Amino acid sequence: MLSGDDKLVERCLQGDDYAWEMLVNSYGKRIYNLGYRYTNRRDEAEDLTQDILIRVYQNLKSYRAESGSFQNWILRVARNLVIDRYRQVRRFPQAGGSEELETMNIQDEKVPNPQRAAEQLEASAFLQSGLQSLSPELKEAIILRDLEGMAYSDMAEMLNVPEGTVKSRINRGRLELAKLLTKRRTQLGMKA
Amino acid sequence: MECSKIEQWLSEYLESSLPAEETEHVTNHLKTCPACSALLAEMRSVRTMCDSYPVLELDPDFVERILLRTSGRPRTRPFRERLTQYFVRPLFTPRFAVGASLATLFLAFMIPRLPGVVSTVSPQGLLRLLDRGVSQLYGEGLKAYEAKNEWQEQFNRLKNNTWNSLRSIMEQMDGPVEGRKKQNDGEPRKENAPKEKSSGVLVSTSSPA
Image (cartoon, rainbow over all chains, first blue to last red):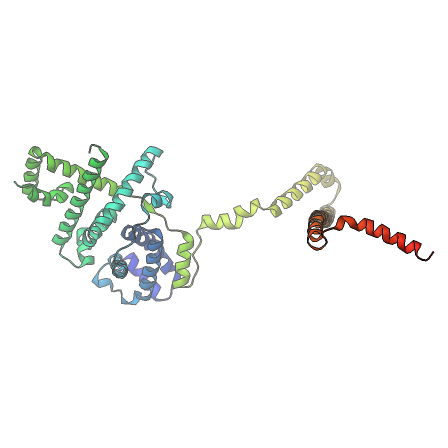
């Protein structure tokens, strides 16, 4: 039986443009955020999102429902393109940071007051810089698990590595971030 | 147990997905090791940060650009957006304000007369009356439109005249400066000119005599 996404893909392949629009609405935001977390830049994230969605549109025919979910397929396409781009430029520029976070169009209903907002901004800036200091594998593991909320099995399928490796990378990534946080707190003279 | 071994399990311990035996080892170790306890607390903080990490919104214009570059079909506007675009936004235009004012005037003019008119006039007569009223209103509207055009024309004329006057004043203000400059450059002793001229006149009037 076909899932909702698979039906949309089928309709899309039959020339239904509205079905494609629905897919873009479902995954566009997620891919954009994924791109931003990898690159730390909004302009790069927009370029990536556009390139990824164009590639997905051009390669929809190659998607096979029996070999995995559409979500994993589209995220795999996204990841491959991000890695290609990463190889081209070696590393993404570090611009952005807290200044960019301050000006970006964010949706966060959990922020009740300015103090909380400032704390969150600080935490997000730390997380961004911390992620950029991790190795690509660890960074990817943290993004997919802790920011995207992917299951271990989906990550293993997408990254084409055993589940144990995924868990190990996540653990190492978290440990490194935790140590960075300790270091930062020590520098600022704060307690955990 | 060594801290490095415990560190390998901390992530799964945090997610409560570690098998019971290992969980017990970690719990016992944490009771006696402040370093690992602090590390676990920081890992927990990192996870909290990840949970509250902001989500970026996608700009609808950007989605439109992607759709136009792929399927070539523009974005479908949601009902609310269409409502705003076609009904709410036009309400705040001058055209609507003029229309609403005219309609109010028309109603204010017609409603007090309506009971008397209705009692005396037949439905056909009432319709004719309404038609006449609408025609009259339309005529008044046209007159107002023409008057507006006339005012606009007068205003433009006034604006142009003012502008031309200002320009000529500025040119006059610039003129003497240029004149002085020329005077200084070309004719260093211009102040003698009136004398020469007057002497010339004297010469010309006196010579025939």
